[in-house]
Length: 189
Length: 303
Image (cartoon, rainbow over all chains, first blue to last red; front, top):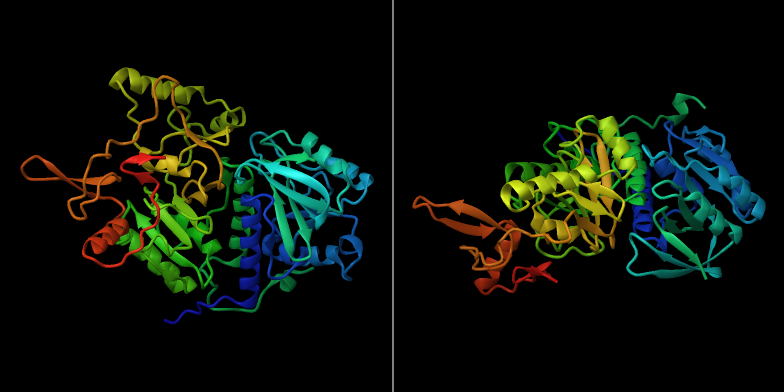
């Protein structure tokens, strides 16, 4: 019996994106580069009919590239849900209003802290606010510079997270991704 | 949106045995496991061509990570050459086209049962531990719903009681494997049935560890640079097995975790438990240029 042991292009892409995501999340603050970029590629590796999503803002989270993120996310089979129920939230956080909206995110329960939201947000690395991260996955501490996120967000995050409850965050800049799980302490410098 | 839109063209076999929806579910759960170190995330645990309890949890985690360029090492009680280890490793080569290795340094994914290699793992390596019983509270709380609440409340008092009773009855803590350990100061985990010798290798390690229990359908993780502290009393320090002064009769190496081999005359001999580490030492003794990485323990001591 011969087996087809080579992955299809889809398999390779989703596997590689997952590998970058788990690297990014297990080493918060470390910049990882995905082979194919963008929110659609991330969604394709993680989302399917078992998940719910919510998009806040949009025109592919700020219109730089044309397309329809909602439609792409729905094409994975995942269902749209209200922000307070959604598993995966794709949100632009450029304004205080957007950050305020996000305060209704699911943070899980003490019995099931995994039933919490995962947030993907566009950001720019290398310019903007300096953040010092510490916690699991980080030796001592690491400093990153992130732009494109409203200053009120980090305060909102600190308030929302009552470890082990809280949400997990990925900052996405084109093909680059930085993971900030709820276990990470973020200090605004 | 119809089901037809979501259906991929027919194929005889999916890469890496698991179908893509199974992999996506595992990816989601693994990411949550990393985000909350030590918390046991429930997952579906699919059927694999192996009986539950023989490493199906580790198998599924590895299959999710697998790509054709992966180099996989599989350990069973320290050995690369047991039937269980060999057949799992061959399975990865067969369904994933992965490269098989016995060398810890060459592997990108190390799936293991009961041991962590003696050579230090690098940050680009992932350790997947097979877990028979992920619940450290099971001995004190058989009801898993209540155990879940206890984890939620960080209510671990009874685990200390178990250790105290061992101390009172036996004069020392006799918990030999699956030593309950606090991860990131919040969740107590069972580090899988690794000996006490190996638990310290998880503390502030360079590598990511994924622990997966297929039969129990739970997956949890220890990210790199995370505190893993065995539960100990202030006045009774943590003790690893007394193998500091044992010498391997085949490789003449001292100060690593050993297998004890009883002899006919009632005495016993010792051999290195980490089989490929032993092979490398023997080759080096025979004059071959063998590269051996830094080890966690030196002369039987850590640090």
